[in-house]
Image (tube, rainbow, N blue to C red; front, side, top):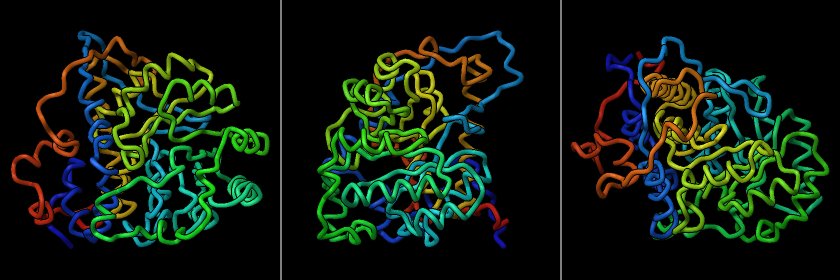
Length: 376
C-alpha cells in the first residue's frame, strides 16, 4: 500500500498516465492531426475568455447539477466517447461507464470501443449514451442503432466529422495504428458516404434523442434542428480530424443564439479545468464532454481515477461559481464573461497545467510519485 498522498489536482494524474501507457498509446491520447493547430486552438478559445465576477451575493449554497435529455447529472460534465480505449485501459469502455455511475454523470460509448455495446450496457444499471460510427451499409447501421436502443442506451449520437480519417502525424511518423483503426483497415469507408438522407432515416427509426457529434458551423447546427435533431454536439474531434479548425468553445455562443431552445448543446475540446466548464456553460452550452482528461485518468488508474477527476472538476467548479457570485448553473450567462487576449505562447497542455513549466515536462513527468484512490 502506498504512503504517497492522493492526487489533489487533475495535473497530478499526468505522471501516472504517462508512466503506465505505452509511448504509442500516449501519442494517440495526447496528439492531434497534422500541425496540431486545431488542438491548440481548442485551448486558446478557452484562454480567450476572462471572468467578470459579481460580489456581495450569498453563495453559501451552490448547486452544480443539471439534466441532460431528462437524465440527472451531478455536474454538467459527460464522459466523451473514446474509440481505441483498450489501448489506454485494458478493460476498455466498462471503466468509464462504471466511473460515470459511481460519480453521477453520463458516459457516451463509442460504437467501436471494446468490449462492445451489449457488454458495456450490462456493466452497470445507469443511463448511458451511444455514439455511432458508420461502419456498414444502411441495414448494418440500422441494426446497430436498434441494438443500442434495445440495450438501454438513452440517446444516440451520430459522428459526422469523420468522413476522412485525420492525418495524425504522431501515429504516422512512428508507424503506430490504434487498435480500432487497424480493425477497420481495408473496408469500404461508409462514413464518407454519410449524408442528411441517412440522418433522416435514422431519425425516423429511433424514439430516443438523436445528436450530431462534430458540428462546427452555425449553418450545420441550423440544418440539424431542421432535420429534427435534438442534440448539437460541437466538436472538432479534439483537434484530431480537420486541422486549422476553429476552437470548439469559440462556436458555442453563436450556435446557441442560432438554435435557441430547439436543441441541447454539448461541447468538447480541451476541457481540462472546472473553470473551462463554467466558461462553456456561460456561453450557452448545456453540458461539456471530456475526452483527453478522461483518458489521462483512465491511464493513471482506471474507473476510480476517473471518478476522482470528476470530483476535482466539481471542486474547481464550486470555487469558480462562488467567486463569480452565482449559485447554480442556470444563473450562468455571457454577462459573466469578457473577451481577452490569451497569455503568452503556451501549448495547450501548459496552458491548462502551468506546473509543467516548473520542470514537470517531457520524460520527467513520468518520475512524479503519486498514489491513486484505492492505493492509500
